[in-house]
Length: 228
Image 1 (cartoon, one colour):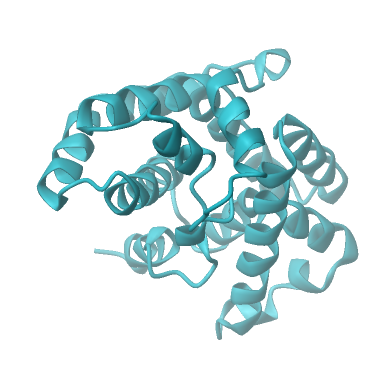
Image 2 (spheres, one colour; image 1 turned 180 degrees about the vertical axis):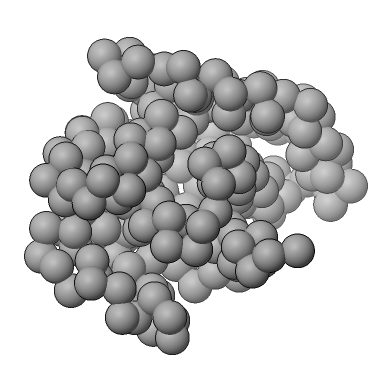
């Protein structure tokens, strides 16, 4: 098995030090308000975000950023990065995007092989990576020879696993219930990745109003464990 496989596992690991575990993307308020209260409602919430944001916006943009990296087109990468940031509907979601991007770029600075990549010292490329995590993720996958299909699958699984881990703490949800929620998605995630390949440029965008409402209200939530 090639090093690319193991490096992908490292990139999507919950232990990756970019602070992903500190964000709930509005889910904390959804739990507080009673929108999410058990495994069934958690599955419904995640499924809505999957269809309204991940398939239609994040995964297609990850592919666009990967194309830019392959072509060496720093300007287009920055344009798509700004577009991604503009699709984040609340101040918390925008702050999360930037914080995770900066943390990911800082991590690449410290990895032995990645630290010499010229993109990390180029202002335009660095601006893209400081804007969002996807740009750095696409760069790492390209440099380490990770296939596009595996890149999408890994990124999507990382998002889903982090959300379920957060829900286990918030609801609270038993570990077995959390695993059952993950298992229910395993039959549909590959199809979600395939759909992302077919999303046209003009169709890229997010439509998750419940998440936007929850994220906005989370900004003033009295007691919070998560940053978003």
